Image (cartoon, rainbow, N blue to C red; front, side, top):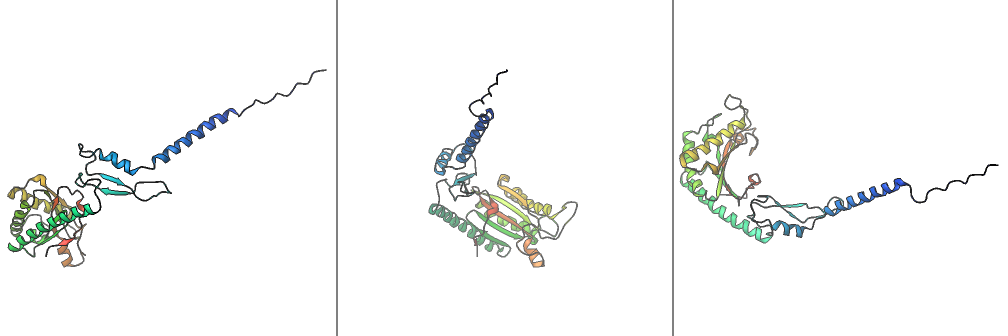
Length: 273
């Protein structure tokens, strides 16, 4: 009679695939712990590290510094506040009252220059033709387009030449630490000619005409001048009336401090009386 075979006993320990699975889970755990640790930044240490780059050769010129702020994104610490720093003119550590003092000092200087320009224009008989406004970084001279150009043209009229020549005297006087931004604007009436397919081209040509007058006749350094055309896209008022369109047709000459980069942030804080 044949002997009964004993049943084979199973191998002890976990199945082989469990080792691979456990390794995978461990690696994933380490990966997500690493991600979580990287999402939280010690701002004080970060500022200390960034300050070591100060005054080096063009390390992030005109860039941003990171400041501590509230927790967002489900409790993960993120850096949300951003303070703009222009060319290291305002030190990274400077804030609060010191910033206010610098702004107030620059505003007082700009006010003095703007009043000087305005008084000169009054003396020359252009009190009503040029509107002078300023803030701590920009002095803006706004000239009605009809004074400067005939309809649909970008050639300075004889009266416009006299006015630009008068303005150039003070522009040169206050240009030492500034650059000139000339902006052309139109109303929303369409134009479509071989020379000016749209108001964009017309407005830019008008800004360039003013710039050429300052360069060719008054010797202003071309590297100090930029000319921009905005067409009808930055109106000051409604274009539905002739009066509104006349206001929107204009050329703006802006004297901008060289350290001030974002000219579109101009907020007119004061108007010269």
